[in-house]
Amino acid sequence: MGKILRETAKPSANSSSAYPSSAPATTLSTSVTETVRGSHQFKITGYSLSKGIGIGKYIASDVFSVGGYDWAIYFYPDGKSVEDNATYVSLFIALASDGTDVRALFELTLLDQSGKERHKVHSHFERTLESGPYTLKYRGSMGYKRFFKRTALETSDYLKDDCLSVNCSVGVVRSRTEGPKIYTIAISPSSIGQQIGKLLENGKRSDVNFEVNGEIFAAHKLVLAARSPVFRAQLFGPMKDQNTQCIKVEDMEAPVFKALLHFIYWDSLPDMQELTGLNSKWASTLMAQHLLAAADRYGLERLRLMCEASLCEDVAINTVATTLALAEQHHCFQLKAVCLKFIATSENLRAVMQTDGFEYLKESCPSVLTELLEYVARFTEHSDFMCKHRNEALLDGSDINGRRDLVGREVTVELKNDLAIRGTLHSVDQYLNIKLENTRVVDQDKYPHMLSVRNCFIRGSVVRYVQLPPEGVDIELLHDATRREARGG
Image (cartoon, rainbow, N blue to C red; front, top):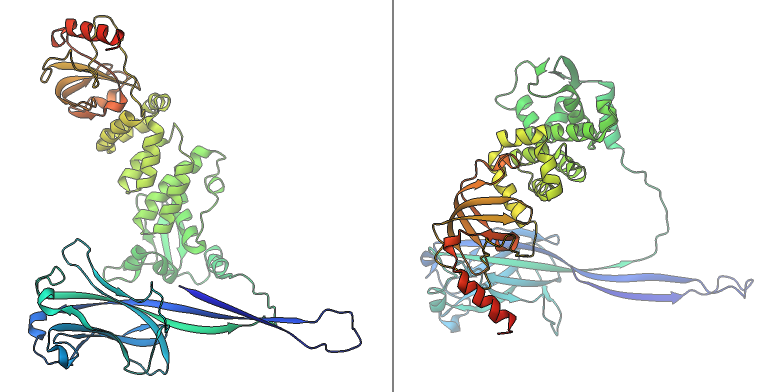
């Protein structure tokens, strides 16, 4: 929204000559000119059938409102001007409501339907107009008589399946003068949240009860239905519960349901430690996990995001595996990324694997283990190749003079996080990106979660070294290459 500001100031006359030393009073006002913008998309189907309706006759869009006025798009298949003899199609935007001297700018866009986004745009917003915006009266219009040559239009990407699509943006220009405020009225903040929350606290006028693990919660149907689409269907939909005197909630703990109701009425999270009665971060994290699942169950998107943000802040060794499983099951992509990054560090991975939560992750979300492996493989960014034993040969992407055809042979790849994988070499490129088949982990006791992985792709940037079978390397060529490098060529 563009703004033009013009400030005017004038001194007022001295109100009394009794105070000759006082400075003259100054008043201030500001003229603000701005555009109120809106847009409308007009789809024209059956274009070929519209031809021949006559020069000067148009097809009109539905009326739409911008800046307090009604507008319509006029498309002329045979053109608007007689002298053009139907050579061009015309396109205009017209004021469709009563108005006098309505000042406006416009933009007309014929949309490219090939996916290349080469739209035909005529805009008056971004260029300087010598005479300023257009001034219109009722049914006054602005646009182009020769918007597009008809023969070119009919062979272009703008026409698809005998259909055209036009987008129109209108900017209504408005001016107002702002003067100084002559009043100061203190307005108290809204208390509607507290007032609705009090309904939950005192239970007055409640008309539905929920039983959760033997505990009864009283609530109000209208409040629940207004906040949750699931409660709305359960209480007022065609398949609503007939017995609202006491609705039994399965698979949820009473403190979790209590926290859910607190959010519905107060629009905020309760004090987790007060709710659980435990002064520990672990208990708060566990409550946030259960509350996230409850929020997803009842369609409370804001609560789900609040729980996701809280869990991102409190990632820890003993809870991260269950949090990762939760993120996968409830499509919390940011939380999932935070958990994977936390686990992927070598110092965290071993500790996380010893937790009961990791066993739960393996059983409930086995597909996540593959993603975890990729995260582990990508964690170290720079290559650092080394030869660990004198009988081991190094396959290096920068010098492959000593390599014979190794595809189909068994190799061992050690990553920079100490994970060693043995498998059949399927392919390798000059950047040491490696694909292995029939893989197995060298230290299976240390990495039991890798037992189910049979094929993997390893980026060269995370490889520490590759151990090759002795018959796969020409040792003499490697020695020659080493001597040439030592001599500087």
